[in-house]
Amino acid sequence: MREQRTLCHRSIACWTASSKSQQLLRSRSPKDRSRIGWREKRTLLETFKGVGPIGSATLVADLPELGHLDSRKIAALVGLAPMSHESGDTAKRRRIKGGRMHVRNALYRCAIAATRTNKPIREKYQRLRNANKAPNVARVAVMRKMLVILNAMARDGTAWRDASE
Image (cartoon, rainbow, N blue to C red; front, side, top):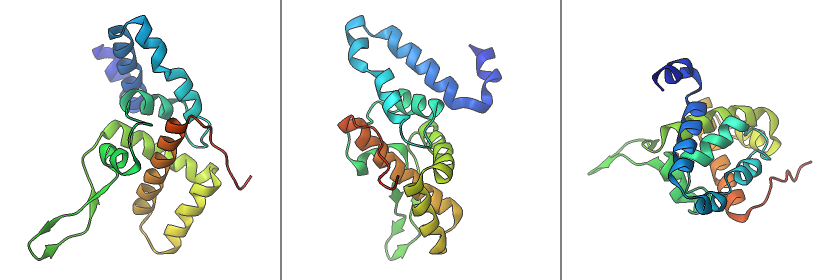
């Protein structure tokens, strides 16, 4: 296992998804395995332009709550909700923090791909950049929007439909 970890250090999401899914599938009974529906959920998430096999595997394996929580809770769970830093009269900028790092990293890579291939995501990113937001601020906003959309897709069991096409 140690060798696999060092060989695959650049694609941590791939290693994490495969090892966690293997562990979870081994620990569950055959009856529970059929209820999970991981393959169907992955196929559903991959209909969203920008989410590939590694991104969907990471979301399904590391975020089993996907489709079961509302948008604010799922964003806070992943670490994409802005947290305020206040003490007395001092109020600092709100920043994202905490959450599940592997899921956030996979969403970052998916957000980069989606800004190139998914028209509504690209439009949101360009709107934020035109409003003089920093590139990373715009990417985090796109990541949160993607997470909310993917959560709704998993909850409703519907595939991605691009209204502009």
